[in-house]
Image 1: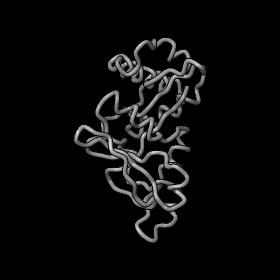
Image 2: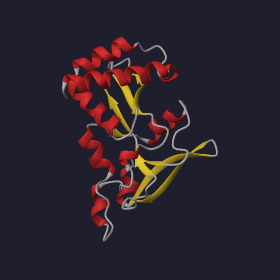
Image 3: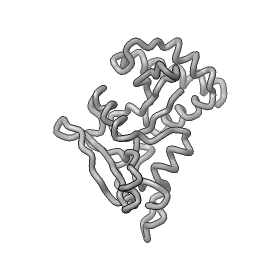
Image 4: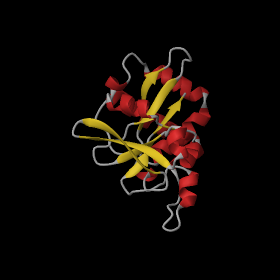
Length: 181
């Protein structure tokens, strides 16, 4: 990233951080920024999260490792990551109307991890997300081996976990990611 892009991203992240202090009680922006400046490759991942509509924000601090945890906090599943199958195998199994990508490959290319069901539920404790969209979540191998994949959303003030074939995709389904810095 160029210096100007880095400054713009850090400024945007700081504004979001300060606007949503309830997501990261007890965390100081100066410590987050220092950590980000120590790991410039992580800024690239945050830039990709931002560019695809994720609105990443700090949602935790791992006191054991010292890492800050960023998660996509956009109200709906990130708009630049929708209409995708769950993984490469699901994508390649489609006979027609293949989408351009899949959640697992896109997350890897961005340098982030797709949220687990537990992380998704933790995020929902911080606000109401995916009230009109849904997000793929990391699927246990036993389910994936049978051709399925899991996704979540929030409806009727509850978080729901559903299943679909990994090859399916919908305009309102994307994925949320996490990044440890």
